[in-house]
Image 1: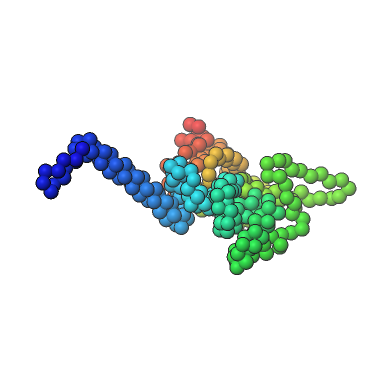
Image 2: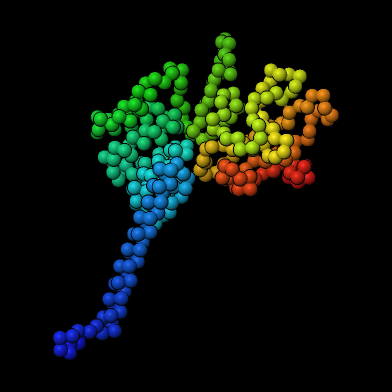
Length: 290
């Protein structure tokens, strides 16, 4: 109810309460929009700095608040491609394209997600659709050129199935065969260890057995501290780590082999501090604790 003594107007309690409710609702809406914008801005800053997992965390927060946020879905897919989660990236990019089929940028990155899964025919189709919509899209042209250069002896297989081969009447060198997976990194250290960073000790190619120098291993040694080797990649979701290692032979010393103690695998670490993340220690404290 409004009462008007003279030229002045006042709100009754009921009207004032309704006004306050509207004002509070408006403030909450503005606050939520502001928080969402901040989360997106933080994610983009982290993405451009190369902190893809950090960016993905903020983007997932945005998507949890608004599952229809196509911008957040797109950038989350970009983070997933950068960290090797090509299946997750495909899922999110298809969500974007279902709402915006004309989104050329999203379709190009869908091609990249498919190529990362070795689904090359589907990737090629995605790139061609990009060029049909935008003939000047240089990245799609370059991607098609890369696909055209792939070796003729590369075969595509169902990424969710099983694959194998057998040979009769042909001398096949199994060491010449290579199996690639977007979800597996297999390090035999037969080439330069560019995915790894030595943070402690001396790391180089070495002999496991002094009496058999033809057997080369990649090993680290530190007489006064930790021989630590960190992987540079970021990983998403569940992780399985398998390590095959041994202590080197000590020729002319007794005992010739030391017990395999103080071996440590750390996941979710910061890449520098051995106290970070989760550590699995075998024979810790000089073989007293595992």
